[in-house]
Length: 257
Ligand SMILES: NC(=O)c1ccc[n+]([C@@H]2O[C@H](COP(=O)([O-])OP(=O)(O)OC[C@H]3O[C@@H](n4cnc5c(N)ncnc54)[C@H](OP(=O)(O)O)[C@@H]3O)[C@@H](O)[C@H]2O)c1
Image (cartoon, rainbow, N blue to C red):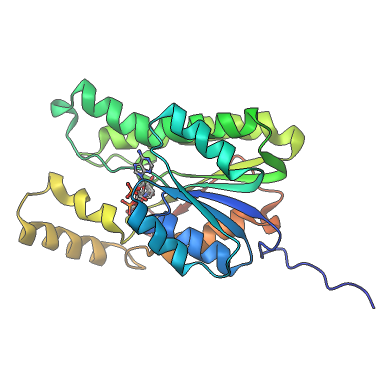
């Protein structure tokens, strides 16, 4: 009898490193990848929430380590700990809402080191150590903020646009060994990060709630859920997307078109 063909959308036999796995999108990506058969290595800063994610993974082959991704030394330790991987999901990131007129150098450094330097330096270390297998896939979290002008998020948007541009170059550099790189660009996704987003609207909870309700109405498909992003990540991490590199999937519930 012929052996059963591996389903291209599944992740059986793949090891996936997921950053930001202690919350929101990264947490759900880790859970969904484990449900699709992957062995997952999860990381985040908060040990308690990371352990909670660990307890929600399907199967018992997974591993975890806390790391602050703004520390180069901790990135190096993480790469040593996770071993060879077939996929990387860069879920760690911060929001950062401040009109450009009010930004400071410290704020710029914080948002860029979390959202741009961290995923770039982690990718660099993994590649330099040969830790990403041939045929591997790297997924970055960009945002519709990289594509649109929205007041209050100029620096955040800059980090997401920088990721997008660097991802395209990385895709060209790594195509020779069939390592792929792509971005996901969701609009608003219901996670803890979203709580900080309306801070440019008001510090009043009721006004922020009104802003969120208005956003829900503005999106033809409603706001995104972490599962929506996880399904797209699974596609990009799986062999089903083996011909896809250097691209960005905009997931905005129809709001920008
Ligand atoms: N939610 C949205 O509407 C939305 C839309 C578009 C794009 N995105 C992007 O999606 C990504 C995930 O966002 P989310 O909504 O899931 O946010 P979240 O729920 O706030 O989760 C952020 C995650 O990033 C981790 N993190 C932040 N700074 C870190 C650092 N220095 N070192 C290590 N880990 C760090 C956090 O770890 P700890 O909690 O353990 O510190 C947490 O696990 C971000 O890049 C965000 O920009 C989000």
